[in-house]
Image (cartoon, rainbow, N blue to C red; front, side):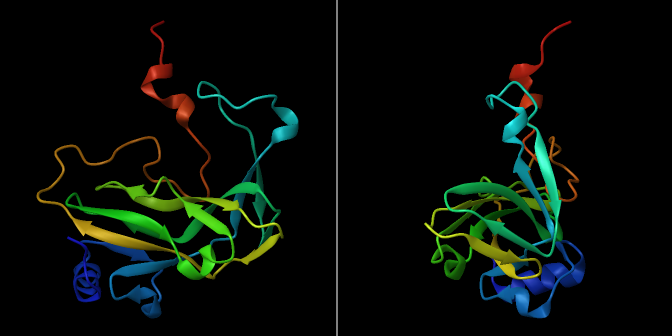
Length: 181
């Protein structure tokens, strides 16, 4: 079941759900808008020949109020808001329609697990033929919260738990890459 604005306000007021800093206008009828932070990561392609699932990816960090995404380019960003989900809620990250209509695709693998705590890293892709200029502090995406039928037996405690700032891929830490010594 998708949670309404009334339920979201109740959960936030009780402290069960944390979304902070929260701007009152961010709570929509069935979601909470999140804003773009000023921290970005770009793949450092000049120092790598290939990206694979077994190796750590090198990124260049950019800290700025504005970022320009060239056409057909990818970068990582983060929400200003830090979230903490209880063990019986999950959230979907969706791009705002107004942003998508500019040709900017926003993902975060779409899913936030119950028990997750931290800022949400966003994958941004400019599918337009023109550069797109973004500004920190602007609403960029929305969180749609769903109530689970019961608490998760094993809430999220993975490699992105507690992330602050934009966080690059940690796929190299997957269990498939861990070898016996």
